[in-house]
Length: 453
Image (cartoon, rainbow, N blue to C red):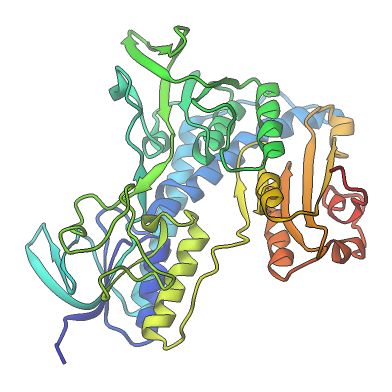
């Protein structure tokens, strides 16, 4: 048999790559992991984790405001952006250290350099010219911000990478996009006191989400003072002393301090030598894989956002685990890409699992829709008008719950447990016979009795 330098070479030390490398090493494989930036990947370094820390910071404004309704006399609070960013950077450095230590403890070797695939079993490090042979190669390079939309002056825009390192909190920000990233940063900056203008080319935000969720969040964001410009695009941006002049496709203009292009992310495969090595890519540049994350080249695999299947950190981790179990653990494992719980950390928060109403209607002839919209108990004293939305979709023929959707406080926490229930095949009768926890918002899941459609 041919001799290889390592059993597994992983390109990318993000969530999926690190999990695959650790588990493979624990199975006894000789593993090297190459990372050209920082260990931890998008999620840890410039994605989920730092973003959620900023989300937490932005929500204190609501707490200070609401406190007065409960008798608290709170002096006018002040906020310091530099303190937040410094504390965030410190926490990210700590987490990166944990990722590095976990790789080391597992016995995987970290190579802090860019790596390029040179063939089915060869990786080259361009910085040194070193060539490493591997029995298996795993591509786990994740994604990168999509190219700026094509408008005059797009060089003045920043991406979701740079937004974490702004030197100061802008007074005004224009955000391009209508998905997770754009909406989460819109909520962050609005909560911190920035004037936010959100620009989206579509008729509604959050394409692919349930229509009630989309319209509910749009109403909540407008109530919070976020200006939402739908079915429009940025035509040009001109930099003038102290500001950016943004001209829209309809001819209107507004001034901004920062222009954030948050129109999504794309697989990071450019310059990795994949096409030259015979690895098939789709029209978005994503690595095409089968149910076991194997490419058309039998020795090369890919997991996580670089495959553009389900671009969520827990899915990358699950795919990395399944790859290592299958290839090195003699435990053939497929990953279920259905019934995936997910959250959007907007404010108010969104949590969903399963089908949207339109998707469910296309599948189930006897669909039953249960819905509740109400002001939470806390709002009765705080005076806040924002409502919670909860929605259950039930197949009337089998009574199985096929979708659950929520807009409101702690929706992400609630949908995690709803995901457990749906993955077990929970029925509406199962929910109905579950005793409500009162008084909570979550009790609505088990007290909705009459379908609205």
